[in-house]
Image 1: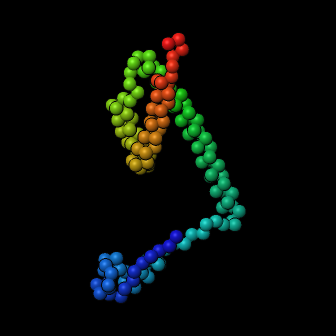
Image 2 (image 1 turned 90 degrees about the vertical axis):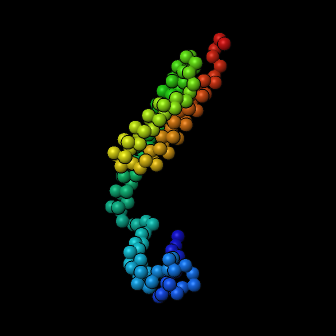
Image 3 (image 1 turned 45 degrees about the vertical axis):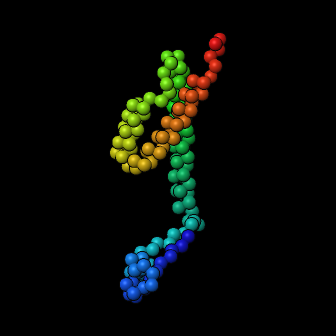
Length: 142
């Protein structure tokens, strides 16, 4: 980690690009705004509270995994249903609706559009993979 800066008392006279120069006053202001943080601490109360919060995150991560597993099981059931009815896996209209609704809900809850889209695309791709496995399985008796 580090910071690389160019400081010149008269940026317009600098040999390199004047727009990337800081004056000494600007540099002093920049240094005054820097916050150096420690990687860790010996403060027992802080560490105990941090561990408690991390445990809550671990619990939520476990719940997320369980919910994703349940979602994939439903995707497999949908895949079997589509297979029996000779319907393609990808339903573009449905996917568009899902993504649009999720982005709106995510924004309301303080999540960025980019995060929601990336997360949901990964989940959707995995759902398609689960449906494809079901679609490509040999049906007993065929």
